[in-house]
Every structure is written in structure tokens, then in C-alpha cells.
Image (cartoon, rainbow, N blue to C red):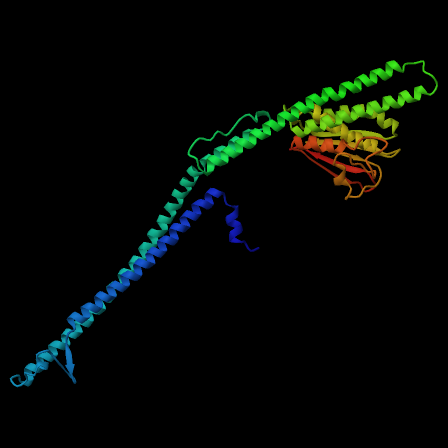
Length: 406
């Protein structure tokens, strides 16, 4: 498998990438400076060597016999052949000496340049490493406000939205980011407070009229009743109970969406046993066999009331949407709860829609039983507990629902 360097670099923390960028920038600048110095040094020494050759090599030749400037001035009558030959030998020795000097200087130049490049490269690598470590330290100091903002944001939840980052310092990008985050927290606090007031008011304003209506029906239409009114009374009471259940379900959904206020260790196996026992009568009416198996259960951190509603909705739906002679199997193992039932065949494409409010297997929202809120409430409570709720169709119909707590 071929690894992409850009992908590997993207996996590094921002602090490491910033330190690596500083080191790479220093290394490139150092290499450019080293190349510039070496080229100028080579050019300068070459010019100096050429100057030495010109200065000390001012000897001309005539034919095969080198002559000095005195020979070329025209004064040749007084000198014999022996002195001229001696001067020529001296000029040749001088030329050879100059050539040797030039070669020696060239050798020294090459050696110096090689040593310069070698030790400069070693020093450059060492300095790049030191600059990388210094860049790591500087990046940590520069990102310290961001780290403190991240830790503060993690501490802030629904219960302490009144807290603010309150970052102090100059008016820079980090300060403006912290101010923006504080403004967002202020808006969230107002929104959550408004939702709390709405739920509290709705709990009173919606439940009270329904309770008064139910009491009026029971008192005003008490026995004995004229013929035909008894059936009307039962219909009105049934509609009243369904409306109250709907209001309670909507309020429970709103409460679970708000998150958890207080959490304790909850024995999920004991809660499932209680819920199964409560639904046994309904299962008997529906001719459904219900059973519970607990294997090495472990407590989970959550809200006991919401978890009880969660299991009630899951197991209750498994009993309600079943067939005569069918069964419901509840299994609690470790921190996982599975609910399996028999029932009508369900396609995998229909399952995601069942977790939406007011959605059921029927084609419309008006069915004979239920309001289509059971699974949506269960999913909301599961998310509030950081749990995962999944469902898949059974081979012979029904569902296989799995609830996994962290």
C-alpha cells in the first residue's frame, strides 16, 4: 500500500506540523544561503588565483626562447648568448613556479570549499533540529490559549452554560474567537432556558385540562346513564387517555432531547425485569410469549426514569407490533440490551424511517394504536446516554433491536 506524504502529514497534530514547517523553512533558507556563499567563495578565489597568475606571469616569449622585457626593448648588442640563455632558464623556472603556485592554490580552494560545504551542511542540520525543537516550544506557547479554550469548552455543558471562556489578552484573532464562542454560549443558554420554561409550562398547561376533562366525564356521565351514552362516555375517556399519553410522550421526547441533568449507576437488568413484568399482562392479552435473559450485566451511568421509559418503549413496541402466538425475547449482556420479536415482515429500507416521530409501519399517521413516537423517544434517550440504538429486520419477520451503552 502506497502512503501519501500529504496524508501522513495531515494526521500529525497541528503543533507538530507547525514545528515541522518552521524547521523546513529554516532548512531551505540555510541551503539557499550556503549555496550563495559557496558560489561567491568559488568565484572570488578563482579571481584571486587568476590575478596572481597575471601579476607573477609577466614573461613574454619570442619564438622558442623566452625573453624578458629588457630583450624586447632592442638592446641586444652587448649581451652574449650565454647570459640570454641564463635569463631564459630563469623565466622558465618562474613560469613553472607560478603554475605550481596556481595549482596549489586551486587545490587549497577545492579542499576549503569541500570542508566548507561538509561542515556547513552538518551545522545546518543540527541547527534545523534545534530550530524544530524551538518551534515546537513556540507553537505550544502560541497555542496555549487555544488549549485552554478547548478544555473550557469541554467542561461547559447544559448544566453550566453560564460559564464563559473570558479569555484575556490583546485584541487579536484568538481573542475575537473566544468572544465569538462566548456569544454563542450566551445564545445557547437563552435557548435552553426558554426550552426548560416551555416544558415546565406545557407540563402544567396541557396535563391540567386533560385531567379536568377526564374528571368531568367520569362525574358528569356517571352511572346510571341513558341508553347510548355509556358508549359515548367510553369513547370520550379513551380519546382523553390517548391525548394524555400523546402529551406525556411529547414532553418525554423534549426532555430527552435536552440531555441528562443528573446521572447515577443504573442496573439495566433489574430495570428490564421490572418492565417485562409490567408488560406481561399486555403480552398475555396479545397472546405473545415474553421472556428475559440476563448474562453478566453491568450497571450503566444514566437517568433511571429515562432508561425505564427507553426499555418500556422498546419492549412495549415488540409486544404491540407482533402476531398471535409470537414471542418477545429480551437479553441483557454486559452493557448491551437486545430485543427480538416476531411480527410482520419489514424491509431494511423501512427501518430508518421508524425512528422518526409519528412514523409507523402503516402508510399514514392515523393508526388504530400508538402515535408513532415510541422508537423516536427511545432513540433520543439513547443518544442522551451516548448509547447506540440499531435495528434490523428478522429473518421470519419482526425486529432485532440492539442497544449498546458506552
